[in-house]
Every structure is written in C-alpha cells, then in structure tokens.
Image (cartoon, one colour):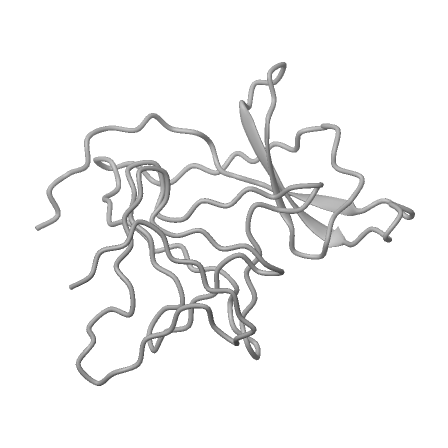
Length: 169
C-alpha cells in the first residue's frame, strides 16, 4: 500500500475523493490532531444516512454549532408536520411524596432585534432572581430589523436542586 503525505484533487470533478464498493465498511476513516474532517463550501459538510444524517460523540457535546454574523448555532427542519427537535428524556423519579411545583415568573429583559419564527433564545440574567430565562420568537423580524422580532417567554416551573441520579433498574 502506497503512503503519501498529501493528496490534492485538481478537478474538474464532481467529487475530489470518492469510494464505492459493496465491501467497504466506511468510505473514509479520517484522523487529525485538530479535526478528523473539514469541509468548505456553501455547506461545509453534508451527511445523508438511512437512520441519521450526522452523529457525534464528545465529552463537551456530540455536535457543536456556532452561528456567525448573527446566525443561530443550529438550524433544524423536519419534513411535513413533524417536530424539528427531539430531546430524549432521561428517566427520573419524583422526590418522596412531593408533587411538581409550578411557579412561573415572567422576566423583563432586553431581547434580540432579529429573529426567525421558532428561534429559541436563552439568556443569563445577572441581576434577577432567575439566573436563566428562555424565549421563543413568535413573530419574525424583517430583513433590516423592522418591525422588530417579537418574543414570548417560555415559562418554567420553580427551580429545584439536583442530586445523584437514582438507580432506575
């Protein structure tokens, strides 16, 4: 097997690197000191799969996104009338004899001028009894910010201290 230190496809071609075979388990197995793969283009990387388009595992997050120039860190779209995001619940139990308490309080805060319908915005509020609050964009802003986006606060129940997860079998 020949080993080269670099490969550059000069094109023109639809794909600079391509594999196809019935006995290839992975099309590419890439390792790097900074990133296993990096893509540049209108969309940096594209994934299509029979079960999931992209999967990720990492100690600080499975998938990380950062929006530049005012864009969101992640965009999720689902076909038809399906949820755009699924948070997999973790099993827990109610504390001995306690019932869930609900004491939502609305927080007055500065909100983003720009927003698209369905955007979620989580804020850390230093001068409030509630350290975090979340809003959802219910009316989108225009391209130049007029009219301003309108946000509705996602009202959360009373905060409670966490504890070690019980063994649920």
